[in-house]
Length: 82
Image (cartoon, rainbow, N blue to C red; front, side):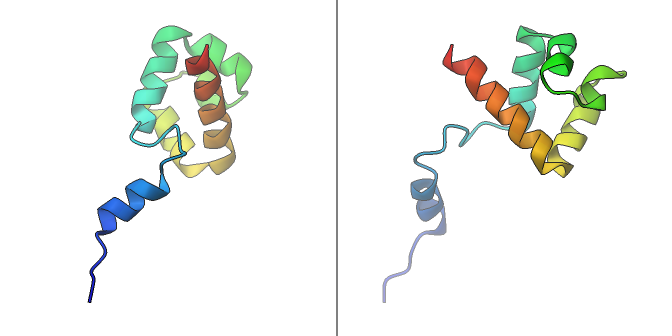
């Protein structure tokens, strides 16, 4: 009987995911440092980027709101490609 290593199978499944291994907090800190809150708020119109922005509140919102996280991740990928 062969036992599959759960970790290796999850790594294989993520081979085509460019965000694999990058934490949401790291992405957010990079984007804020590079572009600032004003730019993020203009690109993605969400309250946590426009009204009293903070890393903590933005992480909380992005983790709980799939559509906002997807938009943010696309913006991150687009900015890293350049």
